[in-house]
Image (spheres, rainbow, N blue to C red):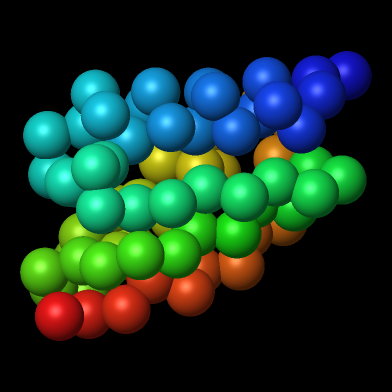
Length: 70
């Protein structure tokens, strides 16, 4: 099982690699496998893509998407 630190690092890396998301504006917090995404997105599609990126990571148990649309 992955640690919270490994999960956070993996989610952040995937956000940086996905061209449809500005990963520099999205923060990632992980506690007991639950990922909280926060920060800013320019549109709803970017918000939902960020959530989909987090879902792809092994070890993620749940996601709280608190990204704000600016």
